[in-house]
Image (cartoon, rainbow, N blue to C red; front, side):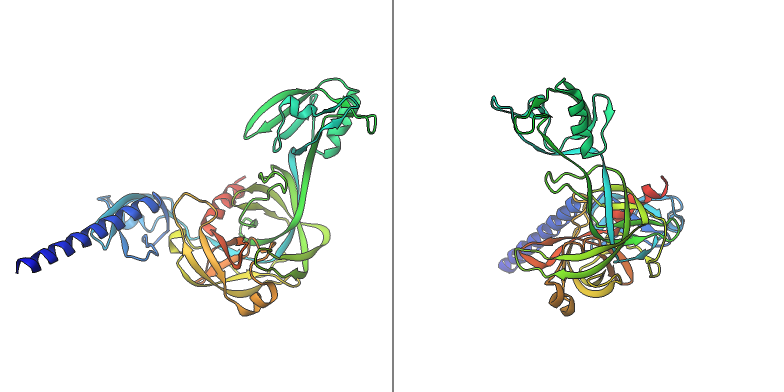
Length: 405
C-alpha cells in the first residue's frame, strides 16, 4: 500500500511540476497586451486551454461592448492555474479588402544612401576622402556645403563645383545627424575631383498589395521593408508612388535558388502614393481604385491558429487567384513584429508553376476562416514551399498612423 502511495505521490508531483512549467512557459511567451473586438471576450488559439478571468472591475460585462475602453484580466491555464495578468483594449472589428494584386513601386530616398566607398587613384597613391572623413556604408547624406541632396548627380555636381575645396557633408546614421569635412582629391583617371563615394537615390520593383481600407483608401503591401540591396538597411522614404503591373511570367524556384515574379509596369499612371516604408511593409493612399474584391474582417493575432488557410496572389496577368496553404506555427509574442507565422504552400497548381514562394509574392494576403490574418513575407531558401508570414494586426498598426496623417 505504501508503494502505491509513493507512486501516486510521485506521479502527482510530476504532474504539478509539468503544469507549473507549462504555465511559466506561457507567461514568458504570451504578450502583456491584447486587442479584442467589441462584444467579444479574449480567446486564445493555444494548444492547451487558456481562459481569461476578469478582475473585479465595475461594469466589466459592459466593457466588452464598448470600443475604446479597456480592462485587466488574469490568464489561467485550465481555468485554474494563473499564468499572468494582461491588459486588454476593446476595439472595433476592422473591415478591409484583401488584394493579392501586383503593383509597381517607385520610391526616392530621403537624401542619398551611401552604398560604397572607393579609393581614388591620385597618381600619388590611393586615397578615399569619404572614408577618411568618417563616412560609412549605410549613412544617409542630406546636404553638401549647405545644399540639399536628393539625387545621385547632386553629389558629383557639388564636389566638382568646389574645385578641390573641403566640403561640409551633413549625414544621418541610425537617427543621429552629424557633419563631417570631406577633402576631395583629383583623380588621375579623369582629371576631376572625387570624394570616393557611391550613393543611391531611388529604388523600383514589383510587390504584392495585401489589403486596402475602403473608407480611407489607405493600402498596405509587402509585409516587410524595402531595403537597399547593398547595405541591407531600410531605405529612407522621401517620396514614392505605385503603378499598375502586369505579371508576364514566373521564374520557377528550386532549393537554394528562389524564383521570382516577372512583370512590366503597365504605364506611368499613378495608382497611389507611398507614405511609409518600415519593417512591417509599405503603406500609402490609393488615388484611384481599379481593384476588385469585398471587405472582410481582420483577425486579431490571438485568433490566428495552425491549420488550413489560403493566400491570394498573382502569377499571371493582374488578377489574383486563391491557393491553399497550411499555417504550421503561430507566434503571438512581442519579440518579432514580422515573423509571426510559418506557412507552407500545399496547393498543387501553385507548386507546379512556381516551385513555392517567389520573390514578388511578399504581401500576398493570408485568409483563414473568412478573416484576413496576415501576409506572406519571406521564403525559406532551402525549402521554397515554406516561409514566414506577418500578422495583419501588426501591419494595421502602421496603416492606422497613415490614415490619420
